[in-house]
Image (cartoon, rainbow, N blue to C red):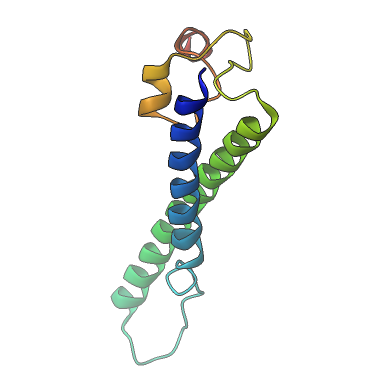
Length: 114
């Protein structure tokens, strides 16, 4: 991969890292324990608990995405970005454009699904 493309993907990954970090940090209120005071009704409390669980799930997915992005940035730093972790072949530029944090090529990703 040429240095211009590598710099392009590095910039995309850094932007994704900033966005995901802010999103994960901003979930503190939504994932806080639901207080069981008597001023809200039972259905309202159940709705609050459901909202909390949905926020926790979203936060977990965002943390996983953040981890993938940080690992991709490490790969940029050590010179292995764009190389499939399974077959060691190149990951197509089109795949990296769609998913900059991809770690396997399309062929290996498809074989993992089967």
